[in-house]
Length: 109
Image (cartoon, rainbow, N blue to C red; front, side, top):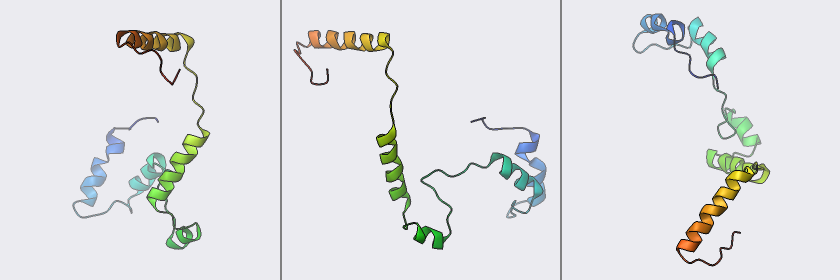
């Protein structure tokens, strides 16, 4: 939400040079500090459970979890009503289209 920080410290040129090709960054203090600051937590669709915990919680794969998230959002979401002026403008546009194509009624109104 705060955007991507791109400065000399976040880019870590010195760490990249130190670790080099084929090395890993997990043991580097800089990596641990930035991981705590910049790490994106997984969503409801992605989990990081151990195999045992995953089995205890029903062995749901990513597709199952995504389906549950979508269904929950569809069930719980309450859209904000359109402002009256925008709704009136949309109705006017629809009436113009209906008149142009000689449509007498639509089932959604």
